[in-house]
Amino acid sequence: MSKVVLKLGDDVSTDIIYPGRFMATVLPSETPQYAFADLLDFNARLKQKEIQPLSVIVAGGNFGCGSSREQAASCLKGPEFIVIARDFARIFLQNSINLGLNTIICPDIEAEAGDELEISANQVVNLTQEKSFAITPLPRARQAIIDAGGLIAYTRERLMANK
Amino acid sequence: MGMTVVEKILARATDQPSVKAGDVVEPRVDLAMSHENGALVINQFQEIYQGTGLEAKVWDPDKIALIFDHRVPAEGAKTATNQKKVRTFAGAQGIHKFHDIRGDEGGICHQILPENGYVRPGQVVVGTDSHTTSHGALGAFAFGIGATEMASVWALGRILNVEVPTTIKVNVVGEFQPYVLAKDLILHLIGKISAQGANFKVIEFHGPAIRKLSTSGRLTICNMAVEAGATAGIVPADAETLRYLHEEAGVKEDVEILGPDADAVYDQVIELDASQLAPQIACPHTVDNVKSVQEVAGKVVNQIVIGSCTNGRLDDLQIVARILEGKKVARNVRMLVFPASARIYLQALKAGYLATLMEAGAVVMNSGCGPCLGVHQGALADGDVALATTNRNFKGRMGNPAAEVYLCSPAVAAASALTGKITDPRKGA
Ligand code: SF4
Image (cartoon, rainbow over all chains, first blue to last red):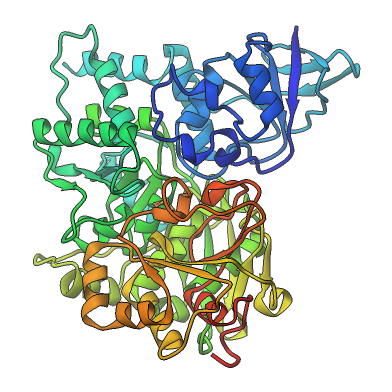
């Protein structure tokens, strides 16, 4: 069971997820402190470690639009968020898959902050609202990267195979 | 069944007779660009090699470009140290397409690649920057990727798991009216199809108005294709592309051009008429919140920004200088100008444009990204309104979520600098 800790609308840009002024910080171990830095209350809760791993962020369409900055994915991967959106912007989705951030495409999702969700392979059940929503599976090619444990591991396998 | 330009490019880069939208391919990469975020790419690249017993060598140093632009000269120790890491890596790996902080050959990555002839029609170009779509202006398939994906490209020379995108064809007829520019066309298109209207798709530009557009104008429209969510924008190469490469980008050898098949399959066809366009403004806080200049005229602005990879080229500075010549920037406005590259800076200097701008009251800054991303120059105050020729107006862009950014063409920005309010350049400029 996972709890929704943040509910967002459409077109949430990478400038909201990870503001440009923190871009000199690049290492995945250091980026989580700046996640949603301008959502002051949320960022404070995150920094004080009040948010449990596997908590859920729910968003509308085009989540992660804008810059290719990978910090926007690594800052959410660190605290082990699950991001459920109606759909994602391309580069953000690919970065998330590459880094192993759990992103779920759920075109009809309805959930509010505080709702409890049960997430399985093909659906999200909102236990609070007693509704369920289908998950759109990722393309097979992308699933292969996830199965390998991310793009670093996947590339390493390929390198060794080419040797 | 015919192929779009991008399908043709991907067929070539994968040694197949044809590919079609939806196929998953692993194309060879012709050019792989990073900027300061190369520091993170290096980190991920070295991690790939950990425990393999292999030496961490890039697949082909001639196909990698590293350009410092986002925070130049460095605004702080952290950035300086990232830049040092990239500089050392470029030296050790023998990467020659490396543009350090220099007044002769530095500048914004999306200007450096075209002006040095690094990008050619038919290439597959990837960059760790979302506006890598710019390079579609030269008929390449160019798109943004993340740092880990770039590390994988550095190792393998291929990009893994690319789903061949579907393509939207945009056909533009008619002639642009005076003071209506390429920027107005792309803003209008984004407003029409929305910030997600082209998600995961390519926008292929056609029509007589595009054929007549200079490479500079094509760079502007392909640059902002990503603001409609597009994977890439592309203008199939033509005589203008060859002219640009041979006359401006110093390319000596013959260049092959590649167009779509007449029976290519498109996801959607959009017809636009350039002659019907008014100057456009993207209002806060999304790029698709587009209005005509008449609808927002009179809005008081505090900062005018001219520059960026979208509109910091010589023709942009020329039109601004023409509008400002012999006049003064309004007292309520700070006007910042940052040419897209050192080469353009020098050309504008020699042409006298920069003197005109400075005499009018503008501050001319070094070339680089500067105020565009609000990290180390030109940040806005709480409640400030900026009018910029850049490409993004997201909340927090230009360094302050409590400020507003409007986007426009260089002509609108220049006319507005004189009045201190959003002004239609067709009147009184
Ligand atoms: S000028 Fe702005 S949009 Fe262009 S590369 Fe630099 S930060 Fe990105």
